[in-house]
Amino acid sequence: MDLEKKILAVITTNESKIAGGAPIFLCDDSQEAEDVAANLEAIIDGIAHALSDELYIIVKH
Amino acid sequence: MNEYIVPIVFGIIAGTIARIVMLRTDYRQYPTYLHGRVIHLSLGFIAASLGAVAVPAIMEMEFTAVTFLTVAATQFREVRNMERNTLTEIDEFELVPRGKTYIEGIALSFESRNYLVIFTALIGTLFYLVWHIYAAIVGVLLCMLISRGLRSGSTIKEVVDIKYHELHFEGAGLYVDNIYIMNIGLPERQEEILKYGMGFILTPKNMNEINTVGNLGQRQAILHDVSVSLGIFRDSGTPALSPLIKRDLDDGRLGVFILPQVRSKEKAMQVIGAVPVLENAIRMPSESKGGIL
Image (cartoon, rainbow over all chains, first blue to last red; front, side, top):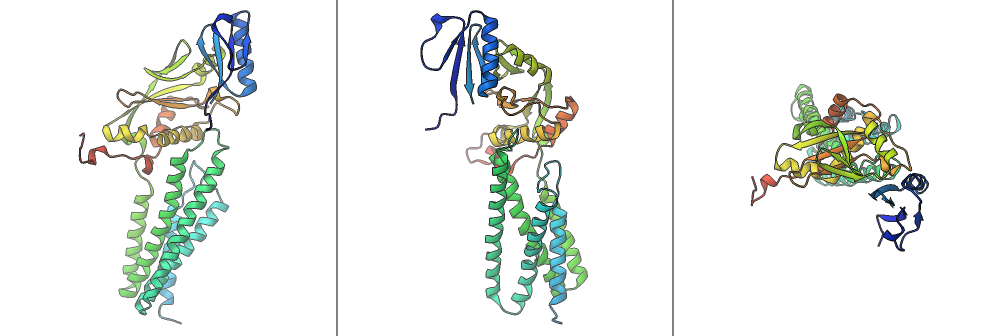
């Protein structure tokens, strides 16, 4: 089965909210999280989605 | 010289002219200028020859000659395949793809136009042989008028009301009116989208149209045509900047989110309105037995 969508990376500032799965990027503050998300979006051609203020995911559509 | 030569030549010329009349390269630039056109004019000429020759064959009691027309049918199905394959191949490299339904619609019309050419040539030769050249000219002109009429179906503006609506964000969610489009995480991207994006609400006029414009292929066709006519603010590797159309599940209204380079409300509304309603997308629930209308 081909997956149409896939979470390629998780970017968060709150360590307690995450565990395993996709590559995880821990950031110190929301500004850093935003920058990392923007960079990753450009690098892997995915879309950065915000699930909450402290949690971003990069999804390939 | 054979008595049939002049009528046959007349039929061939009439059919070829009919193909020229039906061959228009517009904003879609398809068939591609020059080479694409040469291919279709040549095929039109072949189709016209087939149609024109059929009548004298029957008059000479050569009934098996009609089977010739089935060869033509096979040939033109092949034309449809050819168009479909080419367009599907090219579609991968479009910034906003046409979508399969649109491609199928284009391929379909290429095939059907060749049949119209056969028919025109056949009528031309038949009328010439049975009556007179003037009758033939009238018959051919009628055929061409019919073909012209068949060339363009209805357009989006006939089936929906188009209204401009500001885009807005609720958290990370992008909305047109109350229709959710997608989640955009980065504030930077959100600003870009608010700056360059435009939103439109398409309200279908009745139940048939709700089904028709809800079709994913029809929606893709709208996005493609808009991006061709107004330009598109995106590049490869920026999937966040994809124009999208989402549906209000409640009443079947469509929320159109586009990123045109020419940001004129009036022009955008005109372009959306001029998008053809795809044959393959049309649904008529009003004709069903359990008619809901």
